[in-house]
Each structure stands twice: as C-alpha cells, then as structure tokens.
Length: 102
Image (tube, rainbow, N blue to C red; front, side, top):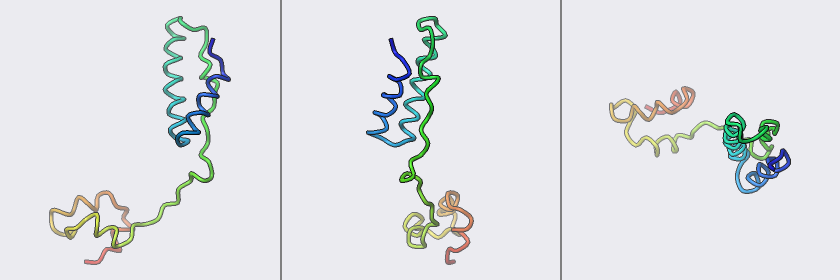
C-alpha cells in the first residue's frame, strides 16, 4: 500500500532530475490522481495530501534585470513607431521601453 514516505521519496527523486517547480507540479498531479481514487472508494486515504511542496532552493532564485538596448533591438528589428514593431513592446516592462532610443 502507498504511504506518505513513498510520496516524499517520489517528490525528492523528481527534484533530483528537475527543478523545484517541476517537482511540485509532479506532486500536485499525483495528489489529484490519488484523491480521485480516494473519492471513488478505491483507496482509504490520500497519502499525498499530507506531503508539503518544496520551497525554492536559494540557488534557484533568479534575479531579474532589465533588457539591454541591444537585446531589445534583436528581439524587435523594426522600430516601435511603425505599425509592425509595436507588438514587441507589449511584452516589455514600461521602464525598459522608456529607455529605448527613438
């Protein structure tokens, strides 16, 4: 029978191969599947319900920085004032787009 220790082992094995986010997603999908079994009367309880997700590891915290002008020019080869390049600015932050040269 599946128990909490088995679920923790599964979560940790996924973490060894992938990121914290992917490990937490795998745990979430397992919870959903096991919960369906519990609701259908196939299992007496859901052992994954009591397993906590993993917090991000310090090394996985990604620092964000603004795009550089060369990076923006590569991603938007047409000037933003012509109708064709305007969609490129929709995905940039306002602080980045204010620093674009005309």
